[in-house]
Amino acid sequence: MSGLPFDDFRELIRSMPGPDEASVDAVRARNAQLTKPQGSLGRLEDLAEWLAAWQRVERPAVRHPMVSIFAASHGVAAKGVSAFPVEVNFQMVANFTTGGAAINQLCKSYNYGLKVFELALEVPTPDITEEDAFDEAGCAATMAFGMESVAGGTDLLMLGEMGIGNTTVAAAIYHALYGGEAADWIGRGTGVDDAGLTRKRDAVAAAVTRLGKGERDGLEVLRRVGGREIAAMAGAIIAARHQNIPVVVDGYVVTAAAAVLHALDPHSIDHVQIAHASVEGAHRDVIARLGKEAIVDLGFRLGEGTGAAIAGSIIRAAADVHAGMATFAEAGVANKG
Image 1 (cartoon, rainbow, N blue to C red):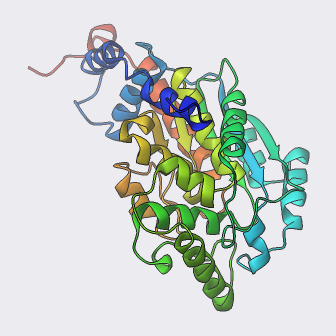
Image 2 (image 1 turned 180 degrees about the vertical axis):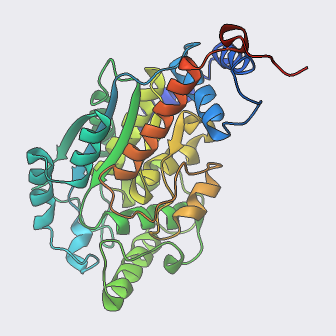
């Protein structure tokens, strides 16, 4: 051990508990007795097993779901990579607080808890085309904040974000991890025009070129071209694993936090579901690289946890169906011969 700030996180990842196979076996055994043909509920059956594996219980349930939104500012926004000004960061956080955003309506509809974490909005991270987003201590401290944000009692954590310029940052992370060309990873984000898209491509290319050649460690990629919300969400994913809390990540930006951890250890995100396949950038490509399958595909690119909220409702439905259905014996229904 070198004693560097990232060492603790590498150890936390190395020591992550695996799935509870006994709970999975119990779900499968009950599922075989429920009043339906085997496999007829498709992915709902898989989601019930996944929930049991990571909640570590034989009867999984979603009773205390939480949406956590992390908001941050980015110096690269000054490069004209977004259709909206940086003031929108503050305005949208206020909108979350007063209940006016899309995510507020979804949380109300599904009866979810909602927390919004502001990460020094008034102090953008440095422009990643010119310098590193963090030093190691600063990145580790932000990840630690994300870990501390995970509240005890939550049984399903849904992660969202807000940050003008953060699709550029996410694209830089993907480009750094997976290679190719900068253009492969970018999209229109908040709706930039063609000139803005060119600026975005150039910013991503410049940021990753600055890293130089050679193998790229996930935490170093996060430190050098990441952002505060992505670092905090990576910390939250780690903490959730150690607290037996399954996680749903929202879209293009939140998936970058999962991608950083996956680059360190592919099993580190086994407790994570990808909520939806965003139309932003090459999100579907990233999902495939992570060995995942999105729960829904609704053409979303809003962020703020909206896709995670909808996917979370499906996961809760999977648990409710599994727990509430009668068995063949209970219902007096003849099983197959």
